[in-house]
Image (cartoon, rainbow, N blue to C red; front, top):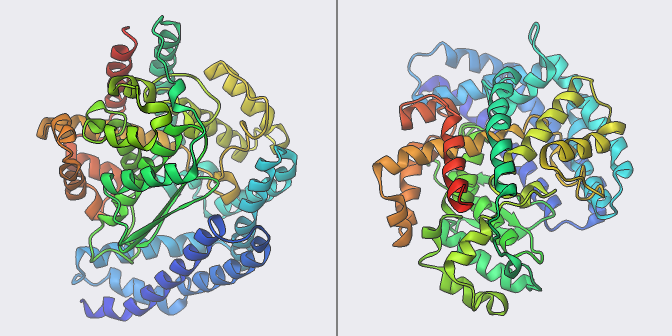
Length: 497
């Protein structure tokens, strides 16, 4: 270890310890904590966030960061940690500590308020809290914005560095231009796909058993992770020896199956980060877009591929004999790929999914740039669903209250879902040139696919950004046409267009 970096290391360890403590409380808050714990737990998270703020924004730490930046002897991993700490210092330096703590307390409690409002189907119950969250985020972005930089661009940079509104507008213009007419052609086609057998009275125990099997089959290591339930499925990690996923259970079989596969994709990424990077500031995914690339790659490109189910479908049939006993594999695969415009993003088919994201992107921009009031949000949401998907939510629960993200202050996150789908399609196109993906899946050799992703993507953590990872892996910069081509080939074949 470089001597200069060695002096900074204890401070980095303290910063990571505080992050881990906050992560554990947030995990508990969403999974096992009793409903009435939120307000007092938020005080604990607020106090820890203040300690984290001080640990990062310490004058001695700033001096050590500067010394490390001037030291040519640092390793690649050490330089990357210094770079990330410097970015975090720059981010926090312009935010008053008391406001930072207050925001941490607010978001710790607001997730519970959102959940209660969703259960009671009452956006008005959540709206005042959302206004507070947005007010803090707008202030923080204004503090951090460079000359001429828009507030929403500041927020986007936290999740996908380098992807501004200008670039995302171009990306989503391609989505609208290509996906909307393809969706219309699919809806107008005469092909009827049966999927009634995916609905039923499935017990939580049944779904949990097959969920654990699928998680392990895809690559989740239960000796280094756990699976729980939450209102909104998510993945979090402390390091590559402690990665945690959640799912949910309902009367739609495909919902729980693909929720587990999706979150396992996230987990496989975190489990694959190199040991010398884990539990450091670069020991996590390169960006939210690249993270979503992994989860949506496993959920859709792999998980909805017929070849994936060839070795395991009989086991799934045996787990749900009441509905699947007489359903052939090709019927099952067609059903889980069926296109049907719906209201819920997390239940959306692969073709319409990015339109759900587009709606949220447009609403976020309008909220943050002052073009839309929170009081107008529910109606604006419904209007966009009617315009893009031809359906209109009749309740807040299936409309504006369906996602947890805004309650957590995660403005700028949603575009990463669509970018992730596009990143994944580009990786898949290149991967098929190097290996027989379908053949490996039919043989149950998904480990070979994981190994490829670990070699080219997972191991690097945040050493490289998403565009660098794409360029190094595929030889090309990000190109959304791979995603368009993937969707066209898949759904034109399925619907005989």
